Image 1 (cartoon, helix red, strand yellow):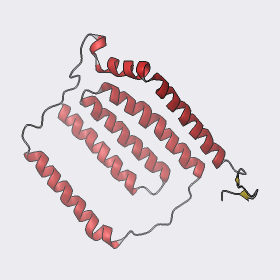
Image 2: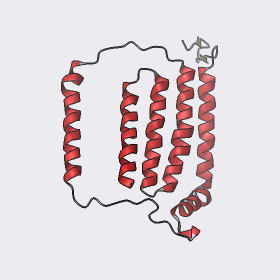
Image 3: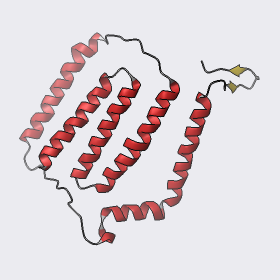
Image 4: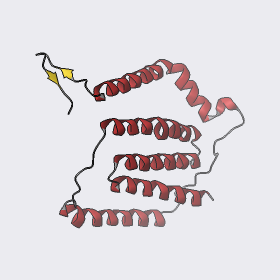
Length: 182
């Protein structure tokens, strides 16, 4: 069952990554990246890393991707000029990717004793011995000040990005001349 779930969500992860590269619209690319991040969270959960799975959903799929979406919407990126790509990418790039994937899949298929990860491995009934308890104790006791300072810095960066992107607000240089963002 774990192998089937792994194959399904690894496929979602690869499909989302390929779709991310093939999309021409930035919002669709951000949505594809959300699929990749969520699939990675499920893979972490299958490996027994519950805290990493929760952090992946909350931090990356939630906060970072919302921030990416806001930045894309603030920049109001118009349509990009479509090109057919370079001839080197068509003649060398794609066959190289196929060859590398073939070699990797052959190595993985023929490898013996790769080990098996089980869902819930390492779980205990004692809450003080669980991984999540230990990580949260370190994060919210020993590293509380850096954790809070990081959140304040991120808030300041967001406010700065909004102030820079707002229309009619340009930078005034040292000579007093106004520089507009056009």
